[in-house]
Length: 159
Image (cartoon, rainbow, N blue to C red; front, top):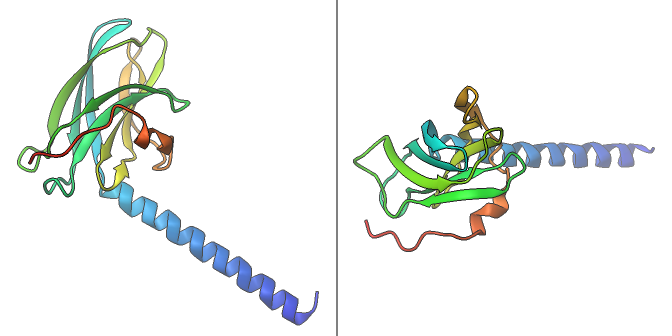
């Protein structure tokens, strides 16, 4: 490799690393400022659960608010979505229930929250309902992003 090729190669690698770092930094900032699932309580019995999900989010009004929480499988399949119809500026953290959810006694589930302008948060709850219950965990901000366009989706924010 001549000097020009070596320099070009090093510049290309440096550019790639800088871009990858910037994208990673942006995802981390987005995740840190997004909705966090801070508690999940499950009631009911197998294939007939109701979940009460507590979310902490930096709501400012209709321009920025947690607009749903969802229950997904570890492979990214949407099992249930609870639409949150408005912002919760003066109610932080807040809890909303949803269900009936058809989850079996040995199914691993993940509960995560979504912001209308920031996407999914990384602080989730994960586990098997009947074993030790769901525990706080983290999930990559880009996990199953295709679900952002999967119905049901929220309507307009009234306040």
